[in-house]
Image (cartoon, rainbow, N blue to C red):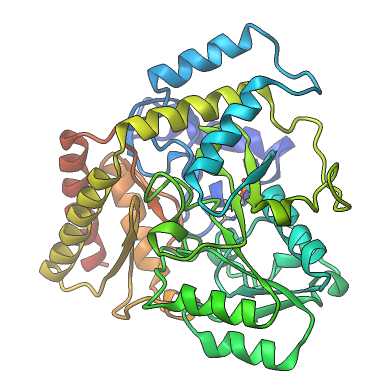
Length: 429
Ligand SMILES: *Cc1c(COP(=O)(O)O)cnc(C)c1O
């Protein structure tokens, strides 16, 4: 396997792009080497410009849940293209996607489409403040909510990968209303409510996915919601990653807690830039043009993106792959653990629905601090050995692997063989 063309493109890309990437998570900063350049993808597989083919567990960081270029989605996009790409006016498909999304989330009467998860969350935060008339927001260490100023502290995803505590260029004033708590630690949230009486909301990934997969323990989410409500704050579920990944709808429903405001992205655009935030009528009526909270977007509800979203969610509902996801994730978990044992490697695995990843640590990982005990050098060796054996993973210890419904038994077999070789390589480090 060689990466000559990728290497060449990387060097060329460095001239006019920053680090040759348009999102730092795509850089191979923590695993070494150069990022792969992709030529195309189909179903469960992705192919780089050197012609190497991989089983894809990145799936564009979540959106490609049906696998790449699903026939029905492709057809819907091609059909939409024929009518025009953007109008700056309403279309019937926006209503259609809104209904699919609202029907899937019990706590959502109305939804507003935006163009990314970042936009969805920054609007959801603004809405929490508009609705409560308060300023402060509690977030959890290791959760990532997009790159808006106020939440770029103690964040997961690329910041965790690059070991950055926050971002330069964020003024102190922008984060002075942000309070940090620890995932699965209700007391750390209580301490903030005891000290501050102007907390508008608590934002959380109902299942953490940006510090690796971290699952809420016991009744953490329910108690969190009760605590927020007791203090006149709202619960904001950032389901940009988890939405439609573990059930048709939200992780909140599976975990039996209904958030006040829900933020979505990734899967709902089927690979196109779509985000959304939604809530009960009483809350959404604060948004312009019904209310005084302003939020707008030239390309919001883009017709091609709506067509991709509708066809993806319609097919997803029909396939209902969630039981299959659980079974595959369980199989991968068992294989990872038994193979790690065979090679005497300390490994801990977390999963939820179609999200899974191993941590190179002996600790059970329930928060950011525990996730950070992982040996990222071991992960780097593991990552490259997986690549060399035809499996494409996110190039970071702190990103979830995603499953697509296009995964075949053959893909799984190939993945297991790669895992065996990769863990063996780790044991020989
Ligand atoms: C990916 C992600 C975001 C940001 O979405 P973008 O589309 O990258 O702006 C926000 N929150 C969570 C939980 C995410 O996983």
